[in-house]
Amino acid sequence: MQEAIRKAHKRKLYNGFVIFRMTLRNILKARRTIFLALLSATPIALAVLFLLAKYSHDVGTSGFGFFASTMGTIQLRGILLILTVFYGSTVFSDEIDRKTLIYIQSRPVSQFVFILGKYMSAFLLTAVLLVLSTFITYLLLTLTESAGYFYAGLSFLAKDILVMLLGSAAYVAFMMFLAFILKKPVLWGLLFALGWENVVVNIPGPINKLTLLHYIQSIFPHPVGTNAAGILAALNPASSSVQTSVTVLIAITFAFIFLSWFFYRIREYKLN
Amino acid sequence: MSSVISYRKVSRWFGEVIALNDINIDIPSGVTGLLGPNGAGKTTFLNLVTGRLKPSKGNITVMGQNPWNNYKLTRFYGFVPEHDAYYERLTGLEFLTYMAQMQGFDRKGAKRTAMEILERLDLINQQHKLVAAYSKGMRQRIKLAQSLINDPEILYLDEPLNGMDPMGRANTISLIKKLGATGKSIIVSSHILHEVEAMTQQIILIHNGRILAEGIVDEIRGLIDEYPHNVHIHTNQPRDMATVLLRHKDVITIHLDDKRGFLRVQSKEPEKFYHTLVQLAVESEFEITGIESPDDNLQSVFKYLVK
Image (tube, rainbow over the protein chains, first blue to last red):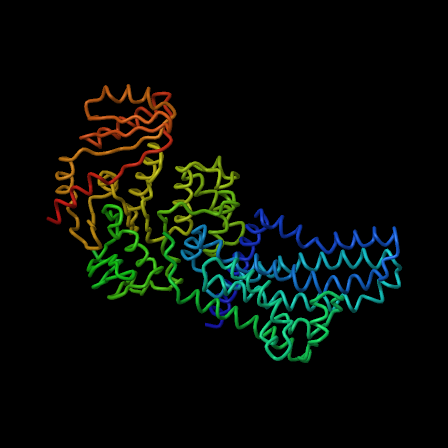
């Protein structure tokens, strides 16, 4: 009996892995991946521009300072959100739009395993693009100054990557969920990410706790510069504790994976 | 014969539209043709039996189990959807290998099984080509291939011959008959009587969401022969082909669309006509890229039956 249960679990894991690999392969061959890879390279391009400017005249800030503000504004508030919108929401909606879901539904793959396989592929791709771009940007901006800068900022880099991973996990889960309940999830996802998240997080008072960005910033606040967003952020300091923020992000990740599974299970997909 | 699939007072509606209405039927093993014009309820019938849709009323059992949301039942069946759905960025071999892996094959076993099926369906030379680059007929065959990957006990085929060339049709019909003879339960939906008739004598006639009749293929044959049968042929030489076809007595009229490489032929003896087409495809230089049979004539028979 126990052997049979063990085998069934092993089989489920294997099926999840197959879904994961097939999805990954499909996404990697998609044209949008080239666009998203280029987008995720924006901080690298900015780092190169910064270095060029720095060598031609005094820019008044260190490479490390530039790295910290780039991560706080462009990476966490822009690229992370756009990547998770595209990967999180299309990982399922592509199956509906192309009507290929019918092939998965005709296989002995449990709904939960399917959701998990899809989620993991979207999360992994988002994470790889973010981590690579962050790491290369960091290398460019610190090693061109001195090896000392590189080692001194490593803990900052590690925290940044950790925050990005936690944030991606939660956003991918949420964006995937949108695809289970809404048509045109990319559009809704972009509205949510660039509208709600980026605007509400700056509003003083408890309302900004309704954004994921609030918890991401609470774990590891970044200097955001002297632009409007920076001034608002300074007026409205993150108030949740690190422990609370980590717990909320993890809880949101699990909650939306579960909700995606729930809606996938009860909904009918009439693909013809 | 004991029934593998059973519908008891099953109805299904979408909003105010009734797609299936009070269906009671037992389907035994062997090949069963689900015949009806477009919009008759054939696809809803198959979506219900495969568990993709839930009946609004009534019960369905497949091998004694309720199919709704029952993914474990998929181990025993294969399904060919009507629509043209495929993973455009995968090759034929990759697609089938992934499908086999989901059925529980390890990587090596999955690849071996995929190759065997590709060989069986004459797609082995196209194994490394992207499915998106396949012709319509090849895509139909790859859909059939994925349904056979687990050697299922039940096969649901929704319009499997749509868009196939004559050779592809002949091979697929022969394959379905062979599979039926091995004791598998196969439900083939079609709106073309002679297609179904070529596979089985056991038919279910469905119209406006109701089952009109079962197992009366000869009667239907008689009725349908009174109406001219429409066939659309896609070819590289429509004008030359029209000239050749006009010499055949079973052809009544031909409408030519030179620009689109398209012929609309009316025949009173469809079986004879299809035989002629197969011969033409084999013996002449005409390249037939697709054949479609609109359901006008079948519609007329249904109108007659429901009067």
